[in-house]
Image (cartoon, rainbow, N blue to C red; front, side, top):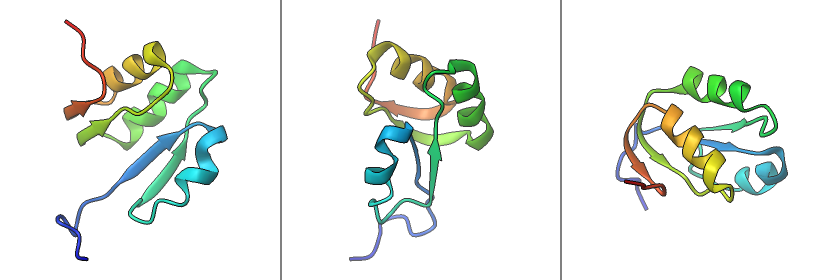
Length: 83
């Protein structure tokens, strides 16, 4: 099957614990392992790779995921919503 957006890049940000699984995603253009214990460094890495058209937050840490999603500078964000 042909991808809908053949020129799109898919960057996966994950912790070191999930890196082996993330490497199995065939559509991923890039894998960035975030230093989860250093929030400021993780934000800097995300900002370095952005901005993004879309950001999908599938993290298991609601507060950290929300913070990283906020820092992502994405036009569209999925996975975190709060009034």
